[in-house]
Length: 117
Image: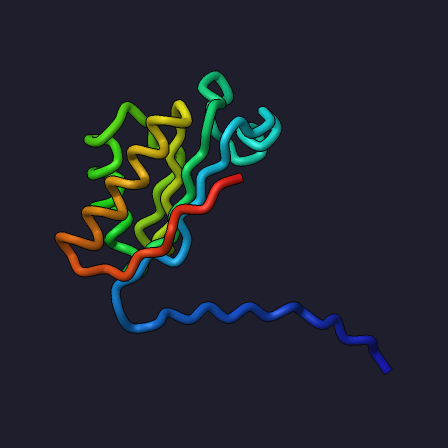
């Protein structure tokens, strides 16, 4: 008898509706975090992470965030709804807050409180 390899299975589901499921800011991360994420570690003061459904709203979020504060887009995926922004702690906080305000007040999204680490 041959031994079968079991492959782990991952299922991703999208729920109907408009929501931000994660809005988190990492202040003063170690430079290793930047390097492992493929981000520029020169400006390693803060990382803002958002997960948005529907995923196309990540594009709108990136626009709102970069207009609100001098932050850089570290990662944007219009298929998964992931957005990572980097910059000074105060700028990342302002950008994430404006993203949430825009999505909630203009587009009617459900939004979470911003969490910090």
